[in-house]
Amino acid sequence: MSTPKKPSPKSSERRKDVVRAEKLQAGYGTTAVCGVVSFSLHAGQALALVGPNGAGKSTVVKTVVGQLEAVSGTTLINGDKVDDRTLDFRREVAVVFDDDAFFPALTVEEHLAIVSAGHGVHDVEDVIASELEFFGLAALAKSRPYNLSSGQRRRMLLASAFVRPRSLLVLDEPEQRLDTGMRHRLAERLRAEVDGGLALLVVTHDPDFLSTVATKALFIADTIHAMTPAQAAVAISSENPHVD
Ligand SMILES: Nc1ncnc2c1ncn2[C@@H]1O[C@H](COP(=O)(O)OP(=O)(O)OP(=O)(O)O)[C@@H](O)[C@H]1O
Image 1 (cartoon, protein in one colour):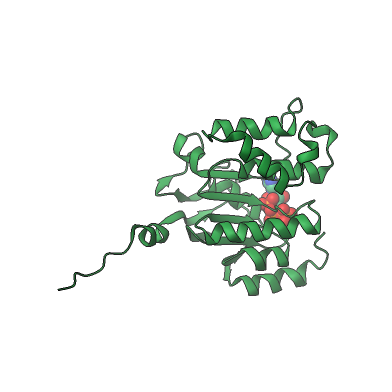
Image 2 (cartoon, protein in one colour):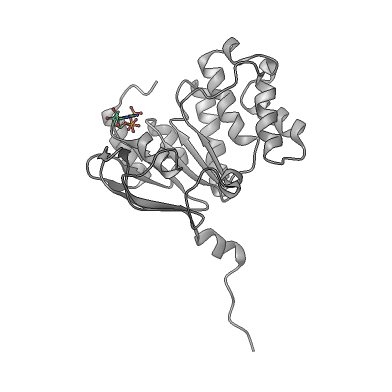
């Protein structure tokens, strides 16, 4: 007699919400910047937030990860209310915003070493060497941030999210200041990581990047529209013909 099959731990794990935003109103003080956002994001999904300049995309992602207080509504990450000071949050969630957050006195490899070692990575040297290679920074490992170009600094900040474990990655316009080759490699890598179970929340203005990476999309404006990646790519292509 055959017994009913239980769902494998992996498949049930993948159905769990990594992020659940419920009636989230993002803004500053009591002033909302866009419509009310509700979404869920599971392992193995990539949600792209799109919309014109000033629509509220960065405000929404900063609110989702607890850097800004919500005007109203809630966000749960892995079932818990967001608190970016907790160990659980810092272990699971890697965030890269477009804010040039670096230590001027530390070299590229020292930045990566601090992040990597701080997250308990064992083979720090191998991990760093591999990410320096991927992000085209190997020859610049001993350089300090102010001796890098803006695109190279951007690569360093992105690399810092990959030298540490993460189940949720949050990126605000990762394509900014990257050349076409790097943008393409990054998109392919993110897609592979999402296929492998990463949950990705990404703000982007780049239709090609979006088409490669996203599994679903939200158009942010006064009213929020859920879209397929193909619909979102069309929406941002027409509003933003010059992505560079
Ligand atoms: N610190 C702040 N205090 C008050 N208002 C702000 C602040 N930062 C941004 N805003 C306003 O909030 C609105 C949304 O800004 P936000 O940066 O979220 O837009 P965005 O969709 O990410 O735009 P972009 O595509 O240009 O990056 C804008 O009108 C902006 O002027």
